[in-house]
Length: 86
Length: 153
Image (cartoon, rainbow over all chains, first blue to last red; front, side, top):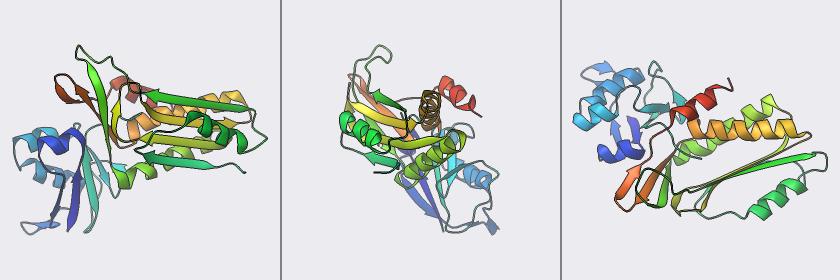
């Protein structure tokens, strides 16, 4: 299972804080962040808009990373808007 | 006391004088101590801001802040470094963030302090939501902050 977390405005618009999905989808492994992002974007209009590449950053196992990153079973993957701390 | 790195993400306020003293007491060799404090301001758009809610990604935040300090230590010769960032509900003029850096000379202390803030603003997983008279509103990231952060690399 992949553990997926959402933060900030993204979490509010998709009304989801956390979900778990199987790394195997339709017989194929979701082996990159890009594939996972596309799959999640299919979940609805808000998902499609707010999870778009460039609009939501991604961290794999708490490390900020890019869409070509390989993901493995049991990884924690977080999507969130550009950060605004400080 | 010897030099230290302190990272704290907390809901409670911090005492500037105490944090300053802790940095001063950490060693007798550093001749420079630079501090920065960020405050909640009321100046966004036309709406009146009554406060801010700060959300973060707990498992990731301290890790990122530690990485930022390690990167700063690799660039400049630093003594003690302290970062305190508040989360949760804050009011206008509340303290949000404290960054304190000691070094032998002022230039490295100034630069490292600014570097830490610039990196924190674009890499640490915090999100601000403004509480206004017209409802709550998430703050959008600023391109100027991204550019400032990129200027260091």
